[in-house]
Each structure stands twice: as structure tokens, then as C-alpha cells.
Length: 278
Image (cartoon, rainbow, N blue to C red; front, side):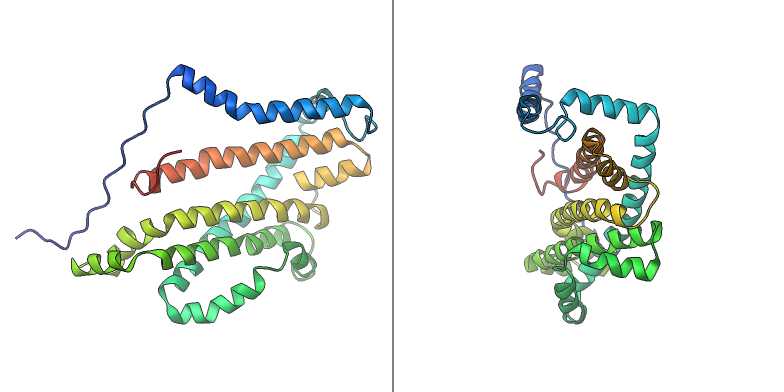
């Protein structure tokens, strides 16, 4: 007799058909339109003379500064140091946050113990923790990484907890009635059901990580980093260099969304048929 207790993973959703050439061009144009409008408005204000050229550079000045810093190796060095801190801190936050969130969602005892603590610590602005971390761990790399991990962990905890709690009870009972043990229940029911919430928490956590990292790089006496670059350029009224650093941050965020989160989403919740492809 065939084992009826064997749980099958959801059938993969059909891959979306690729867009025709004309549709793809129109989609690119729609995505580029806001940036073109913003660039045009920036150039108009820069050339109008409302602000001094030093404080409000033209797009050409920003591009020139970007190229000069890149060719000199300064901008890549700052970017690499920031990425190391971001990946280290956010990696810790993702692992710890998902673990705590799942534990809170599956255990009433853990929820009663941890939820009040998380609720108290989460609303406090990340910058308020900065002096404490600098005193405890000293200025430099360690305090920056740990602060990024601590601050960005809370959105991951909240959304992982919410996702586990949102899994429908009928799904759990149906799986249990077919003989699913705890391991299969988590892998085939709880994890897929909570994954959309977890991905949202990771996205929010990454945004928090970026904000606190750039701020702490300005304060933690780190020798390199995009936050340090922006703060140092302010001392010399080098707005073009500041904007070059801001553009790098924006591009990295866009690449992480496109090639990390969207790929992870396609491989999990879209493939499982839980949400439609973007």
C-alpha cells in the first residue's frame, strides 16, 4: 500500500512568458521616465543659480567626480568596505531574526518571553544605540557590524513571527492528518506559508541596515566606507563627491533587490505558486 503520509512539494508555477521586444522597450521607458524627470529637474535647479554651484552641482560635475573617484580607486575602496560591513551585519541579522521569529511563532512560551522585549527595543531609533555600541565595543569595524545586525534584526523578527502565525490552521491539521512529522510540517507547510512575510522582513531589515550603517560610518571612526566618504566630503563642501557616494548606495540597493531578493522570491514563493511573478 502506497504511503499516504508522504507530502509532495507544491508544483512549480509556470514560468512567465518573456515580453516581446516592443513591450520590453515600453517597460524600460516607464521605469526610466521618473529618473529622467528627476535628472532634468536637478539640472534646471543647478543651472538656475538658486544655489551656489559648489553646493548644488550639475549632473556633469557629479559624473566627473564619480569617474575621478573611481579611476583613483577611492570610490571602489569605500564601496568594498561598506559592502563587507553590510553583508556581515545583515547576514547575522537575517539568521538570528528568522530563528527568533520562527521560535516565537511556534512556541507560546518563547512568544511570551521575547515579544515584550522585542516590542520595547524595536521602536528605539538605531542612532540611539550608537553611543552604547561605541562604548562597549570601541570605534571601528566590530561596533559597526554589531550595530547593523542589532538594528536590522527587528523587522526580520516581526515579519517572520507574523508569517508563522499567519499559516492557516487547516493547512497544519491537513498535513498532520496525513502523518507529517514536525520536520516535514515545517519544511512543506510552515516555511512556504511564512516565506512571503520573511522576504518582506528581510527587505525592511536591509533598508534599516543601510540607514544605520551609513550613519555609524560617519561616527564610528572607521577609516573607509561610503558614509565616511559622504561625511568627509561635507567638510570640504564637495557636494559632487557626496552625490557620487549617494548614487553608489542607490545602485547597490537596486542590484540587491533585482538580483538577490527577486531571484530568491522567484525561486521560492513564485515557484511554489504562492504569489504571481513580477
